[in-house]
Structure formats: C-alpha cells, structure tokens
Length: 191
Image 1 (tube, helix red, strand yellow):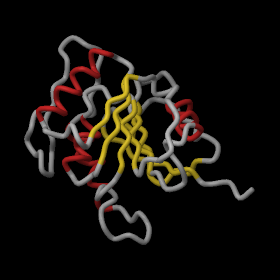
Image 2 (cartoon, rainbow, N blue to C red; image 1 turned 90 degrees about the horizontal axis):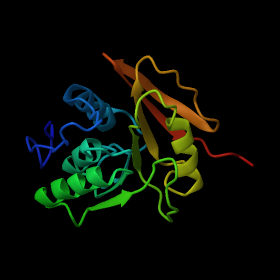
Image 3 (cartoon, helix red, strand yellow; image 1 turned 90 degrees about the vertical axis):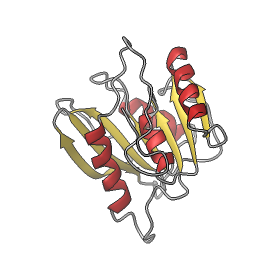
C-alpha cells in the first residue's frame, strides 16, 4: 500500500503481516480524497485538507491520516488500541519524517481522552460489523474531539446497517465495491 498523492506520493505504508488489519484500499482512498479536495465545504474555496488538524480513529496502518498529511494537513492525531500497530505507525511516521506533525495515542476509539481542540477532519474506520461508529462519534463529541466544524468520514462494510446518530447530518454517502463511506457533520443544538 502506498501514499497516492502529495508530498509523500508513492511512499510505502507498512502494514503488519498476519494481523487483522483491513487498510482502506487505494481505490477507495483515492476516491474519498478526491471528494474531500473537490467537494463544496462551505465558503472556503481551498481544499478542506489545507492546514487541517486531522484525527484518524481506529488508525491501524494510519493510511488515511498519512494521506491527509501528504496532501496538506498540518497535524494528525492517530488513535489505535493495539500496541503493535501503534509501534508500526510510529516507525512509518519516523520514516516519513513527520514526527513533528503527528501524535499517536494508544487508546480505544470508543473511549478517547478529553481534548481542548476539535479536529477539522475525523476519519473513523473501525472493525466492520461491530456498530462502533455511533458509539465513537458520541464519545469523540463528548470529549471535545469533534464539533460543528469537524467533517467526519465514517467507513464501513457496504452491507452494514448504519443508523445516523442523533444530532448528526449526512453530507454524502457513497459506496465502492465492499466499502461504504458516509460524510457527516454535527449540527449544533439551538438550545
């Protein structure tokens, strides 16, 4: 697996052999990032990735966050529960010379620590068919990782049912082969 575009284009992303890691395929990643870079995200005319603070939850190999960094994101926080995957991700970050722009947290994406600064863009790619996305979105919102400005990209199996969490609005919903990506944003309560 390789970075598709940007300053790290063509660089390999390490994925541990024999592990239950399911990295987002190159085709889906390329399609998703085309949507992110060319979709109308409001008054700004630049890519949503420019200078973004990115959160890669259930990071695994870190492919989504690393792709965002390659395409202009300012900083990326990776959340991954597995110590082995965190170590591999830290090695890749070091090889890419991105240690100053990245932070790896060994935490469960459904139980994140609190933060004082929300991300601009959040990727959620949990193990398929475990219904973890709504739980994670609620926890990330509660702990300050996402707010009304955060664009959330949720990846799931195309056959997986997905109930939109209360307070979130779907901006886009697309499928490629076995993968479904839903773009959501928290709609702040009026009261």
